[in-house]
Image 1 (cartoon, rainbow, N blue to C red):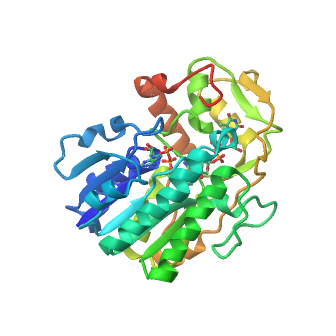
Image 2 (image 1 turned 135 degrees about the vertical axis):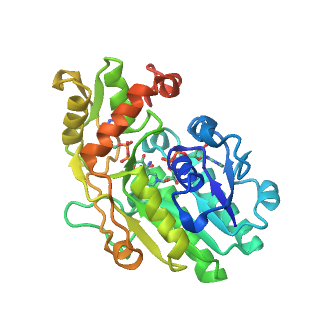
Image 3 (image 1 turned 45 degrees about the horizontal axis):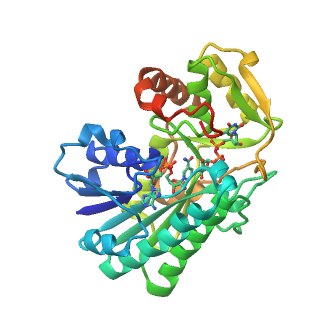
Length: 329
Ligand code: NAD
Ligand code: TDX
């Protein structure tokens, strides 16, 4: 079996590859894994260091928008798991071009190559942000897409292309939409690692607006297990939400991170709100639970404690990624 993992050197993609090669997904035991990754600021081959000499792994540096490269590496692929994306909302507010190029054009180029090669499964990894923002209740998969940021608009575009390649060409595509991930190897531009690494450095944490925006937190291990269930047994053409069932305001989460690092509220710096800041994300994930047997396993307190420990012990991984002058880390 050959599995092509785009964005496999990023946060979630590398977790998926480490789990697969580490034998945690028995149905894919013995699979050959090709990681196709542009190695942007967010990609890091150090995330795959423990398998750097494993003959089952090939890491190819390249762009998902490169049809010639795809013509070289796609043939013979059984399963594509597509993680590659520009993923940070704040960067998309500063400039959206790379988001459109990678997330929309890149996904289309990859879908074309997968169609030409006749792959037997294509998992498109998306996000709950495509649904927009919800004040009450939770989104199920049939909810209309109402993305608000350039990032989520570009992800919605890629979701719809994935759907269209199934409807039009019969490509066996599944789309997954998950909530906010956290865990080891997450770039310190994102809230949890930004706050943890700032606090470990004795620096304040920038809390946007009134701190009452709500996110549902999902440990990356649970997300990757959900993706694997879809890769193995998802119904082609279907969308699966993957949630964590752990909604918190940013202020509540900040309080937990302060406690986990032995800090107090004096370390919080209230800052101007993000433009167009979505108020609340909330996912129903009963479909994947019922059809594929998914349930999140990592409790938030346990997951955060393990994540804080990882950042404490792996300063050499994140320190070079911090630019205290920049807005993103
Ligand atoms: P990330 O930014 O950590 O990693 C993205 C990876 O894609 C990097 O390795 C980068 O080098 C690579 N990449 C970027 N542009 C590329 C291109 N043109 N060609 C090839 N590779 C390219 O992102 P992540 O947090 O690991 O997210 C992975 C996927 O999951 C994304 O599709 C994202 O939209 C989705 N997602 C993330 C979250 C989250 O909380 N992090 C939540 C929901 C969905
Ligand atoms: O410095 C900050 N201060 C702050 O208050 C940052 C970076 C964020 N925040 C707030 C904004 C959000 O309400 O924290 C919340 C989480 O922010 P991010 O970590 O940037 O995540 P979010 O914007 O919710 O998007 C994430 O989840 C869905 C991922 O980055 C996306 O890739 C994914 O699709």
